[in-house]
Amino acid sequence: MEIRVIGSVGAGRMALTLARLLNPYGFEFTFYDVNHESLAKARKLGYRVYKELSEMIRVADAIMISVSHSNYREAIHTVKEELLSNPNRMAKLVFDIASFKEDLLKEYQEYPDDVMVGSIHPLFGPGARDPKHHTVAVIPVPGREGSRILADVFKRAGFKVVVVDAESHDELVSYTIGASYLIAVALARAIESEWERIGELSGTSFKLLKILIGSIANDQADFISHVLSRPGTRSVADRLINAIADSIRDPQSSAEKIKSLMRGEAGLYYEKLYDCIER
Image 1 (cartoon, rainbow, N blue to C red):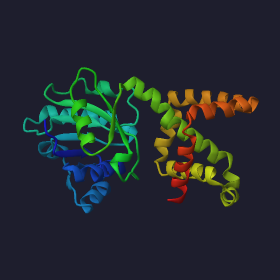
Image 2 (cartoon, rainbow, N blue to C red):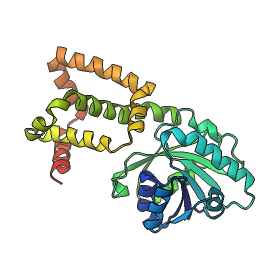
Image 3 (cartoon, one colour):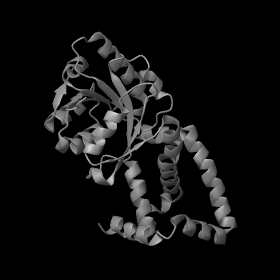
């Protein structure tokens, strides 16, 4: 199956980012969104937009669901109903870009048999510039086709593609996202009253932490809250608290552990640190 036109349910920042990154590689994007301001922005950027989901489904080869985290189940259900009631539909592939999969994939079980389904997680944000520097996780929906085509789409654009099952994905993302948000939010709260003074005297390491705090502050407050409230994030928080206590109690062992973890690549990461600060 050839994917040429991707119709996005949702015209938010990530949907527009993926359109920008995939467009040079032969993928045309169209948009549907109940938010008229978001739709107007997509139109202003030169994309075709639709006020009716059924109209977009008739012209798109694939449907990408890119909505706020609390609306994914409803959006997946709505797309399913449109597919079942639309005999003239073009769409033969549906996928979401949710950050956490949990029980989300079971929502695809009642999709038409002739429609392939899949799920992806772009491991980057709206600031991404070059696909070759970023990774897309492809999460197969058990018993359904679609993941292979999704992997081909993103490989074609130069992304690194990692195929992983939903359970493993959510477990690992509890660290890659959960830990990052925990550290940024906790540090911001701890130094809130000294923010400006600390900034004036910050070295390279703290500047990187400040970049982390600022980048996460760009996210919607409800998404930050969602990340922090997830059971997986709470589990990571418990491990971090214990690790902090151990590090203070046994600093020498902690120093040795972090050096061994780098396996001789610490110098490379030091150079990357300055690339971030001085770019």
